[in-house]
Length: 562
Image 1 (cartoon, rainbow, N blue to C red):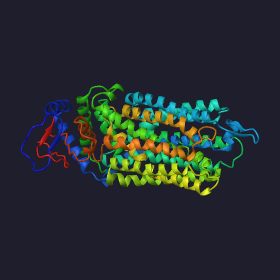
Image 2: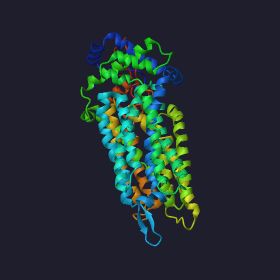
Image 3: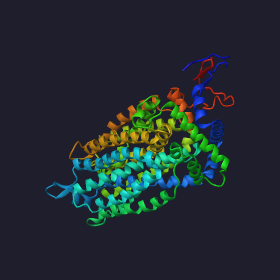
Image 4: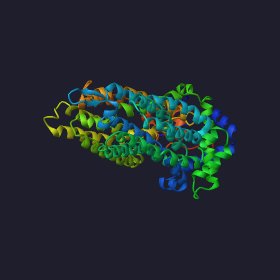
């Protein structure tokens, strides 16, 4: 970067973060001056577009994004179902081993609990890596349709499982399409909507996750009194209700215009964008939006040529990969593993089986409410503040839960209810902040050309964290292993505290930024705590550009960054 002194601006630092003249000329030559001017108009239109106007102009984008994201319901459903089966007597009688010779009581050992839960994570990691290549080559629609087809097939294995080994194989294979759903849905939502809708459509993914958890808790509660194998086969069979209707919606959806532009199919991109918009969007609006996509794509090509996994670790994209990956990793290492094992945890805390399932349903209902409230908060306070303050709230609750673990629930039944209440509050805070905001951050902070692969790497780190969780959490809670019970809250409070420190220094604020503007902020190495205050214009050399400054700076020398 070079700093050129111009006349002072009183007590403020004038900071112009823009493309250098040389790069601007390269971009202009690649896309044409007409596209440059339309891209500038399209960027201005996105900044001026209200949420109400965005919903009016992009009604079909909202619809198709919701259809794609609904696939996440299946994953949330299965993960809660499997972890909750550890507390179901009928499931333990079929797949468990005798732990009490006197009563003949059967329980699934901590090792098999870990194996079943990790089978899904391992399958997801493999599916994620495949998705990075498949999406780039075949697009979002075809990749999604293929994943839904295989999902339908693999459910047969879990439904007809005759032993624990077959069930483990079924969970492993189901992880492949779930790995595709985890990242494809977020990336697709972020590419088909304007800036104003990004927080709603990307965080809807978290709401789908919560819906799946809530449905699973309700289904398992309903099957609790069913005798025999249908107590666990019934919940498996209900998974077949999702793939076909979702596949119909995916088939009818247009392809992502960003993906089409990356393939050089400009006219197809315009046609796809028309398929996502309503009558309020004119042909001129379509032209400007596609021009903005072309400009952003060409800008990123000026920074780097490659779109491989290795490119995610080169140059400025290394920082973007780090932030995206750790934002998602924190989801699994901020104490949220308690929610996945909530029914089992309630039992170990001293609640009856029926009460444990009832509390789980209340827990996920609060999670859904929290996610919807996060839509309002993200628009007012932004992503960074909401994410960090959410972890601070979680820290207080984890310390409280851990402290209650030193009391004996058998001597005071109120202790078990206090622990349960702490988990309910934790779930609400998590789904108000860290849970949904993570999806928005990962979708916004990755570059458009590397988005699919960056999201894959980020989610894979999350899954690796989940594997470690699935190894230690059953042992923390299982009475035949470490038997920590609620005291495990203190361990997760320590992990959550470390996550808070990282987020304060490294997590930027992307609220209200176009993807091209985020590219420039990263390119010029703007501090995470300066992202919100640094004004930026990628068209600084088009018609004179606009005035750009860091409102919080304390210097009196203008600086132009090229």
